Amino acid sequence: MLSAVPRPVIVRAPSKVNLHLAVGDLRDDGYHELTSVYQALSLHDDVEVRDSDELSVAVQGESARVVPTDRRNLVWQAAELLAERAGRDPRVAISIAKGIPVAGGMAGGSADAAAALVALDELWQLGLDRADLDEFAARLGSDVPFSLRGGTAIGTGRGEKLLPVLSRNSFHWVLALAKGGLRTPDVFRELDRLRSEGEPPRLGAADELMHALAVGDPHQLAPLLGNDLQPAALSLKPELRRTLRAGTAAGALAGIVSGSGPTCAFLCADADAAVAVGAELAGAGVCRTVRTAHGPVPGARVIDDKTER
Ligand SMILES: C[C@](O)(CO)[C@H](O)COP(=O)(O)OP(=O)(O)OC[C@H]1O[C@@H](n2ccc(N)nc2=O)[C@H](O)[C@@H]1O
Ligand SMILES: Nc1ncnc2c1ncn2[C@@H]1O[C@H](COP(=O)(O)OP(=O)(O)OP(=O)(O)O)[C@@H](O)[C@H]1O
Image 1 (cartoon, protein in one colour):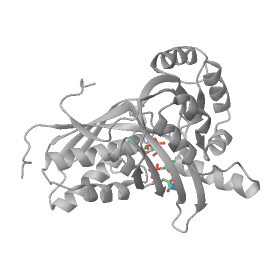
Image 2 (image 1 turned 60 degrees about the vertical axis):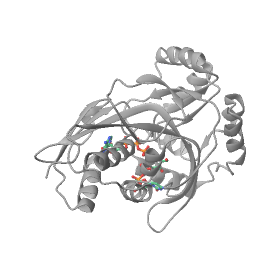
Image 3 (image 1 turned 120 degrees about the horizontal axis):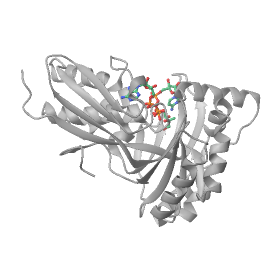
Image 4 (image 1 turned 90 degrees about the vertical axis):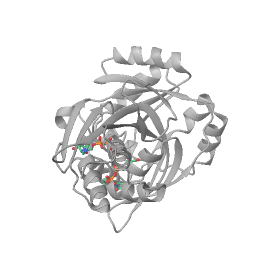
């Protein structure tokens, strides 16, 4: 059965940074209780879906060669989930244009999974409501519901229970992409090990940070950024300490490891400052490459063509 929409569908999905990531105790199900303030950033992936005679995944762009193109890819899993719900075969060709660093701590796979859900809902005209999409997203991964929603939000549970957070103005970031990645489970496991040997710092409440977001002042927000996974990421990749120091030396207001890392995210005073910090960081020999980005931006959404800004 051909889909109701003859043309391919392209969806853009944002990356994310955790402005506040408080990691609680390990739960019986193997996940940690989280309180995280997410912000969606303009660094993005685009996912195109089109009818085909079988399910296939192709990846181009950022570190494409290390991204699986079989059922290990989250978009493959998203297609199978929706096809089962629709009672049809997932005969689609999915093409991913990656801009989000792979295994970088910016929810790259999660962004693609969210994009695939939105794209296939459109291609197959399933008319899924927000609750349906959220449920499928949570099944695909803890960060996928936020990749669907975008903006700025506070997540609890595994990170999948979201409430919107008021964030005024745009915040400008420089992202230092690292050589190699970090596996998220390894970083959480390392945090548990560090906590079994001592007391790495634990973040408090996010109230002050959320007030700074509502005010929209990066100078007020900068000192409030925090990530309980940072000591674990630094333990696994000590060279990130140099990256963090170089970013603030280059003029960033603050720098943190993004999620489970190894990408380091630097908050800058404004767009011009971000360009200057990015240029200096690119030449400092402390990362593979740099990107500039702004947030908050919307979640996964259909775009007309890839050139759309
Ligand atoms: C680090 C963050 O990116 C912060 O937003 C997320 O917590 C991780 O989100 P994610 O990569 O979508 O995580 P999932 O794919 O759901 O889980 C991957 C693995 O990360 C660990 N994990 C993830 C989320 C969580 N709240 N506690 C965990 O301990 C678990 O070992 C899990 O098996
Ligand atoms: N569409 C995808 N894009 C990137 N990686 C994918 C994708 N599907 C599956 N993967 C696998 O997931 C692993 C983690 O990649 P991902 O980019 O999601 O990490 P991440 O950005 O650190 O995620 P998070 O921030 O949610 O922890 C990769 O090493 C890759 O093997």
